[in-house]
Length: 253
Image (cartoon, rainbow, N blue to C red; front, side, top):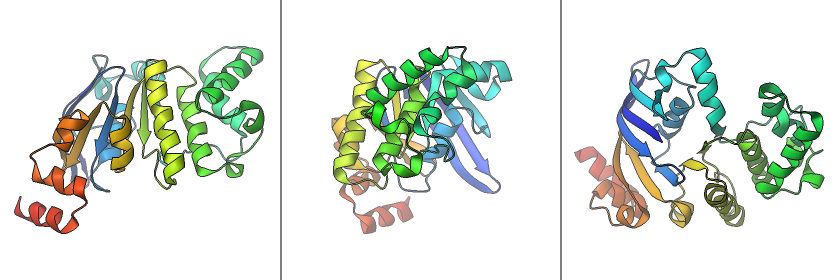
């Protein structure tokens, strides 16, 4: 389980996260929604230890990431896969070497074992291993690059996978495939998924739980139906895409 308690993050004079409280249930898909620039990605960067909080706790299986020493943080990061918004694949490496990289760095598997694991993982995310393994990132479509990045994120068989805007910039058909991939990985491989998004259509297809970040705090959390029926006017304006109503309410708060 991941527990975020009273997380606060200040960059210079800007208070991005004011008091974030959120519990991520195991083996479920949890989406975090909100407008661009609200700090959604900042939350998951704290979970994997890429950022240190100004105050608060981030507990991964009971261990506070913010207070972990180097050795403990190393062990936590092996439990947590992270996919960046643009994939962040190494341009100088082919897809095989990109996906194999964590195995080479963190295990003592033989070359044969690494090849088998890479091919198996590429197939898990819906890529034809024999076809894409020797290709380079620039030779893949946007959706294929995101799948390859997911393969690299899960190659060490993590308990948790964090997705930063996995469907951003993709057409509806590819977005649907990415969403189904996340859902299948969660259900079939007991992975706990945390997805940063502003794509309501894909969120409502696969989320077990939905949280909304607004003004540095989680203002709504629940399953899809309770989220859709939230009495919070900010949530309803966001769902309906009513920009004028959203801004009017925000000014009044």
